[in-house]
Length: 369
Image (cartoon, rainbow, N blue to C red):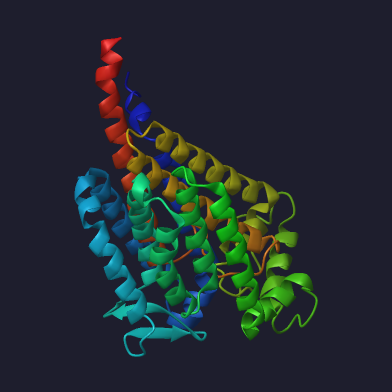
């Protein structure tokens, strides 16, 4: 009896916080050298991520308790407000430019990515839109998704464009849409992606690196080769937690896009396998909640969040494994970054909210048997 409270804790919440603990451990250990040399404080990254951890936990709690009908009523104006933010991020002075891309808006000491906000808003928006059979058509999909995708491409942020497209297309399919229309649209999107790759020098460079990582190992292929070195040197069991040599300013983006490579170096193939297992278990648990949801709107919202976590994890892991070009997509819950973590934890709160509604609605049925 004294452990009965454990049964009430959703597996989704448990796995999420296991991933967050792993995140804080590896962000702390991997960033010591870079943080000391860049900021004079070896715990700089850990402190900032811990603040986002707290903020995200508060947001998770709020969204787990809030009346979802209120969010649903506000989602249409929120959708158009998020498009305005995507326009603002392209304006110099309002946004900050990093490595030739404009993806962050500055509000005092806070930087955030409008595209991260758009992910969760688009999940709500298209779930509500496509739960209405009269509005479930390819025309609405193209009209409402086309403009924000063009704005995100202009940042430029091709990886996020692909991710959001995959999420919304999945929601469209799960709502019961015509698979033939979706296949045609997917083929069109693939052709557009090919054009965008071969009309952009930096995208061409990433694609060429994927095909031949040995070319220009000190230039365009440097990042990929350092990832390969990290994972290969980890072997089956790894060098031991805290014993990475690549973290000493050899591996670029080591707390964000490349953190899985550090985990692989220190914990080996078994460590990466454990991370993959956690994501698979998390995604299965989310889709179980979606299946039990009492209406199509909630089913699609939970499934959309599950697709978000699944696709984003798959993209990051595939890039680290050199199966696709490096994309700049963070590993959910583990990579350093405030905007992504805040939105992801908010989405987990929404899932817990819907799950609680599912459980409360099933109690009368259970008692009637």
